[in-house]
Image 1: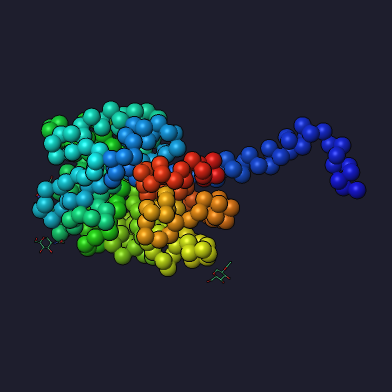
Image 2 (image 1 turned 45 degrees about the vertical axis):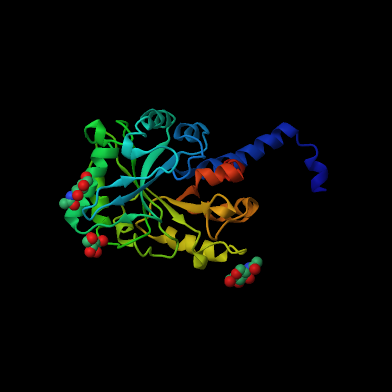
Length: 304
Ligand SMILES: *[C@@H]1O[C@H](CO)[C@@H](O)[C@H](O)[C@H]1NC(C)=O
Ligand SMILES: *[C@@H]1O[C@H](CO)[C@@H](O)[C@H](O)[C@H]1NC(C)=O
Ligand SMILES: *[C@@H]1O[C@H](CO)[C@@H](O)[C@H](O)[C@H]1NC(C)=O
């Protein structure tokens, strides 16, 4: 009976009802994709990465030597050599990205490097270095490896050494601003909560975006079953110091030791659950190079 009368509803009315029903829901839960760029010379330029239109956030990886009296060192793998001034032309890429509304962060730390903070004073020294060298501060151009364009913020990817004084570094960085621009603070903690090295920094509540690494961490990642990952997501989303939370994933099976999620599982089982969280911000991928190989971001960009 019901199906018989349904057939008489004009198609246009049905479509209107459908669009009224679905549009507000998907619009209010729209997230974005964050991506790491910089650790493989064969992943396209920074400008090309932004021009895809898929990534509202790009983290330049990595400043992997800093603090404790060391001379800071930026590593952009095969892209260019910062030490010899080979990366200053990135300034035009940075500007073209920002014109498209992409936020660019300098990622500090990483899995390979030599970095630590030895005191609150050291945190202040590093914060001034970051502000004057990569953000809105001033430094003679010979001391700005990416030229005079200013990045939007700093991404914390602290995976080595000690946890100390990163909370101070975050506070110092947040205290700077120039030309009405805010300094974005973002971070990529490991999913076991609280993060062993970044927990106290995150507790400042000053991070704008947190993209948790739900990979290389068997207790809280996808393992053929979404339960551990969803439980961990819920723990992170309950933390009062987290404002916007992203699901950090490897963009291909080879991009991490473990934790890869097949596209269909992400789309049909995981996104529908985590998008219900009011803090949901989107998905983060390691890395642009691996995403180029797998096509993951293209496959999910309309579902994020
Ligand atoms: C302060 O930071 C600079 C980098 O800007 C570094 O070369 C220097 O060693 C640091 N000073 C101290 C006392 O750690
Ligand atoms: C700083 O460097 C010194 C000497 O190289 C080392 O003994 C110390 O453990 C380092 N401190 C931190 C916090 O890494
Ligand atoms: C997933 O794991 C949970 C807890 O370990 C278990 O209760 C559940 O039955 C599993 N689901 C599937 C589909 O295997």
